[in-house]
Image (cartoon, rainbow, N blue to C red):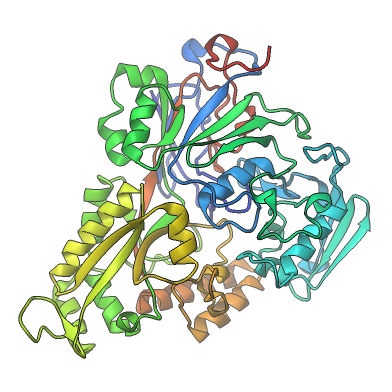
Length: 565
């Protein structure tokens, strides 16, 4: 049985600095099919009620087996930009603030907070029951230490910019602190959704060599129990978590790089949750068995997939070449073939339907004739008649890098390879294991082009990805994009609290990105998670199904892995 809702017009974000932010509209109906009309995208949830409408008291015990195609690079918050690491650190650590289920900013480790002096000062008071998982109290000293680490130029993090905008940090008591800004900073509250680091453990250590990366100590609902490299990572419920011990004893991440193998494990009952492919969602999870034993969810993902160029490469410096490649790509066919219709073509770095999205722009049209003309204008000719363009004696041959285990991106690369062949470009495809993909190629800029996806943030600030200051090794602007006007717009927008003005600024940024095509923005896919039906407490909301993950539970009679008596 399905519940169908329509998403409200919100700007949204998945994670990276705050737990899991997946994206749903809250299910309010009791049962049956309910449609609430509104503007924007349709979201479908499986019925999450107990069979027969029974109401049971939550029970402690059991575990959940999750599938992950990638292994975390490390578990030190702020040092990892990959989703596998961020997903797990979101369960290990806490932050002063977080988003609630309806995407409102609320205190988490903070007991209270205030915004003062027209946004130029923030005042925080921490809870008095915060403890690190080794029993040490968590205090304002830890928050101050985190701030100092983040503004230290020696800290190799892509997330320092928010903290660099702070003019002064002042600890006002054992559990209180204030933060000062020279001017309003639109992302100020989101800065304090980043994890708090333990001063008593990390002070004086080199973050690049500390064992903390594989043996973290947090203050969140779960703690690391074991990490078998290349196999699995197990978290256990923390009895020091200030909001109460989670109901589940363990969360086990099984590392399975191949999605097809992962699905077989799901069918065999050796996984309890994973993200389905469109084919699995539409064709392989139908029938009474699936309806009785599983709950499926569907929503327009808060991420976009793109083909990114290394703009330092001589082939891609000319905007005519980039626009030609973008025009040679048929996005509609990508959605139909790769996603089986479970997605939409997109035009920029925001989710369609949200307030920051520039709806005056249209996805790049598929126009082979114009693509060929632009390539010719950029100096590319098929001089020897072999079907491959050349310029200055060099054939137009380049490699698209994709990460191993992501079938959608691999299929996307294959289709793009065929479509670019039609305009005389010879594309090679190379798949690389995820950790190597990030460390050896993305962070170092050793690629011609790549297919990746970015999470769409709650706040529309995209400074870290598009500002020229971030075009450096390890930076998020790994394609090397530089545009002076974009830099100015991004700086002004993050210092502008007025949303109407910010909308104007970000609309202009999107117009420039559309004109220059540093990325070929491809599509926004639907997310298609599936959860075993024995898990209770799943509450779809604007912030996702994971917002209350520590409150998920399994009836004692259905617990397959009981650890506690």
